[in-house]
Length: 55
Image (tube, rainbow, N blue to C red):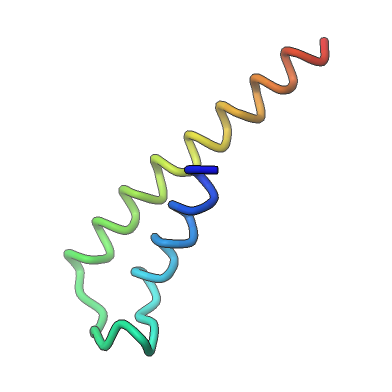
């Protein structure tokens, strides 16, 4: 669940949402990509664990 929520948050930060009232900024994009990397890692670990359990 953490991975899915973190991916959504990082995508909201990367593409400036109208409700955030912010402009694109390199610093925010770097933070969002860091969050995105952690989130995708969390999603991959869960997927691999499910694959191992089914074997």
